[in-house]
Length: 112
Image (cartoon, rainbow, N blue to C red; front, side, top):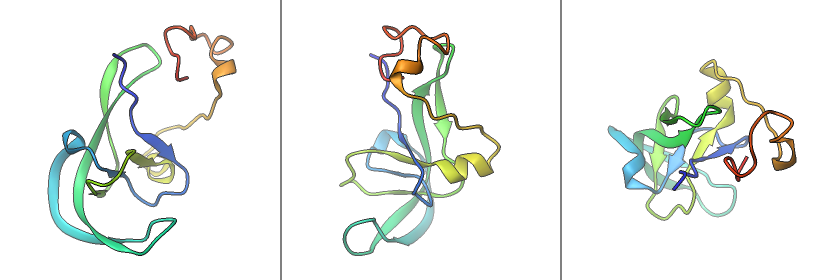
């Protein structure tokens, strides 16, 4: 099964996950985080790595830049688009109908 990976979040200030398998290490810090909806809460600081797949079909762990946070109640893992850009990655936002034009078979990359 192809991993879904984390959601690339353009509004997040840092990465966040509720998946223990994505914790590469704990930082020993606690951060006070303010979600988009609800009250602020304290979260455990971690180094986060989300499994994903590159444009050549190769699986790899994308390590989220800087300190991320862990909250077991999260339904999705988030990686900050801003932190990714600051770390020197390029981010290209595309939609599924662009897959074939970009050279990727829609049946191979159904979540393109």
